[in-house]
Amino acid sequence: MSVWEIVLGAVVLLISIFLIVICMMQEQKPQNATAALTGASNDSFYDKNRGRTKEARLKKITFIFAVAFFVLILFMDIVMPLIIK
Image 1 (cartoon, helix red, strand yellow):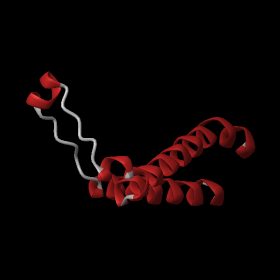
Image 2: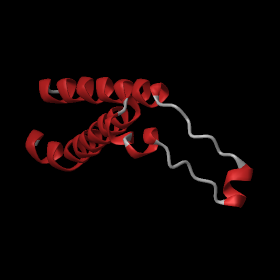
Image 3: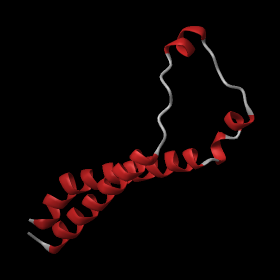
Image 4: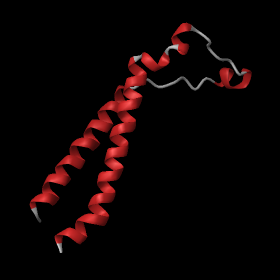
């Protein structure tokens, strides 16, 4: 194994652990059957400003790290075999 493989493997491991922790920190949205049938929605101040809350930041961080994880895995699978030869 080359140094690059070890370093990228460690980065993938850290990103995956970070993604798991961030996903566990997020609150689950209630899957209420009554709300689904009646079409209930909450038009509150909290819902209108959801983009500035802790949940919104966690969602953005999750998206960024998921994209980084995906790109890094593709890089390791497609580009690394060509470089190491």
